[in-house]
Length: 177
Image 1 (tube, rainbow, N blue to C red):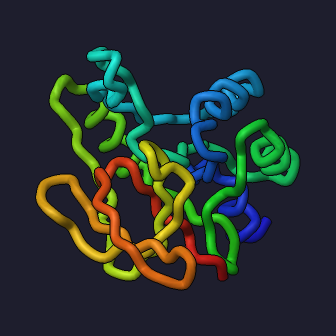
Image 2 (cartoon, rainbow, N blue to C red):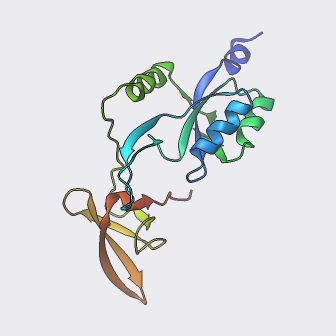
């Protein structure tokens, strides 16, 4: 056997992109298929006004990690699981994540310390409002305004208007290739 053939079937961690809010569904589906999976979650205070509960949410919304050798059968089983979109990679194929990175994440989420994350919006990013009175409105991120507030320009009727919303209420719309 050649070295490339042996390396091709080494079990590694990969990032699996999920449908929006399907992380747990996909996690459970892969576990039922006996595929090793890691969905790092953190505890946060519920953002709903009628609740003050602490809930667990994915550390990386829209993504989870799967360990596989990506033999053709298992690769197909992974991507055809309900909620799967694709394994993250480039033109050469899926990109593996180091074991050290996964171990670090496992230690981080296992501890009792608060883990904070965030997306850093850049001026010009196209965003969609996902919560609140402007839900489903798309616009262009302009700037941060105070702690956790953002200004988004929205075009309507050929004119621009700006709206101030909470940073947690917007999601970046990925650029199409």
